[in-house]
Image (cartoon, protein in one colour):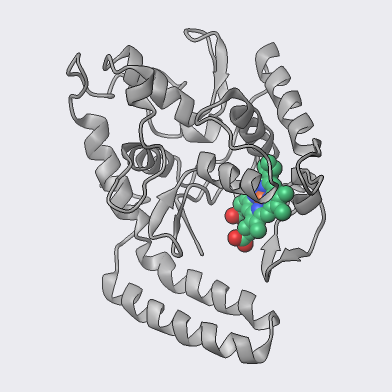
Length: 277
Ligand code: HEC
């Protein structure tokens, strides 16, 4: 049992759900300042029994189970700290991988390991990146397991390799790149303190505090969706709000954005998978 594992508390979960519902109704009457309070309370209550724990456990099983045409497990997958090392690996991603000759985020690296080690085709390894009703995603489970292995570890994303510097610069450029029907950039919504949209606080991802609070709590169990969503999904969702074209799953542009966000979160203690509305 990992020492940093959270306890599951299903009774607490049910109670919290009921409270949140009542809370939501009260909020309509009392105005928006209470929304944030209610959400904070909800999160605090659920923190004792984040359902993401179930995804973590399922992901660990998938990690250790022989699979694919080569019938091997992912236990020799090198996430950057050596074959098979999962502890603390996520806190140093994205990073440059010499074997692939490029910078990869966790999700690209998992595709790499599933193709090179297990012999899956890229298409098979990228199938169902996001679960939908009746269609579960192995990727979400694997990601929940690997990220959970960095809980309590300080974010330490390096820009030592020239490729890492370049990818970070590209991510930064993307962050400020305006376009689409509204002429929005990430910066339009995420570069000011105290901005809100539809009652949701928009984190300022350019401050240490804002970047750390956001990055260290993803992936997250989304209460509204009943699923653990990965960073790829978060960015996909924001690009949709930005009215940008849908990015290909595991594309280099998403890795660049992730590099920018992850590096800005350096020094923050990783605390995912988190819990979000
Ligand atoms: C139209 C406004 C808008 C744009 C543009 C936008 N986002 Fe978001 N973003 C949101 C909203 C709304 C949330 C959810 C906030 C919440 O749940 O409280 C969010 C959440 C996030 C989060 C998670 C924050 C957390 O603490 O959970 C990250 C990271 C993020 N956005 C990154 C980006 C990036 C990178 C871009 C550019 C590709 C982008 N966003 C573009 C509106 C936007």
